[in-house]
Length: 303
Image (cartoon, rainbow, N blue to C red; front, side):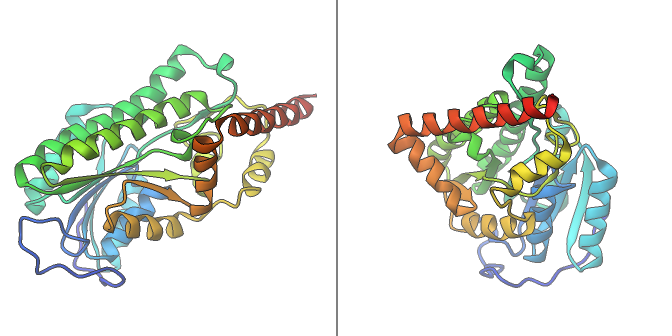
């Protein structure tokens, strides 16, 4: 675990002089980011630190998390790393308590850790179901529950959950993933209303394609049953222009600062969400066509 000094705090509104018992955006804030060793989580952690937050990067991959924290500290920011499996509530509760003890507050928790298990649902085992639900849904619930109790007592805080565009529309070929992400969206929207009465903010990130390890076989702890080569996967995702995690983090934190409820990035992915709501039959037909094309490509590769 490493901690460093203050960082360069450019690009966001400085409210470091705000009353001590109010949310800080982002100067002087305390933040936890799960899945903070790589991808979106790491990019969020680095940007939060550059904006003046003290950040705890939580991940199962402790070597990578410590490396990220060390780089933040070397750049003048403040960061620690903690090895936590988000499926373990006691471990999540401990890191929340430790962060509160060290910093005296908890402004943000980014419940970002997640995996993908792709391919036809017929190929999934019950162990696959248990794993993706435990990480993508119960992992978020564990973070929400542990942080919410703290935020209620201190009278402020912002819970930011990472879902996906697969949480806003159908995702054939990723049905288990979509199920967990729809649940995260539902949790976030419902809690946002409840929590607002007690001055707690809740937002949900719904990324489109972001260039992270999850695009390649579901990430380190994910899995893909799609019969595709890594090169085919890359070509498939390149068609939808994946955004870099750093650009995503910039746009995400800007929306979090504005207390947006549902944050879709890249913004052009909103058209899929709108189509699903306004023209459900058309959206279903297009999704079916896309999935049929994907199956044909996979079957062609197999033969």
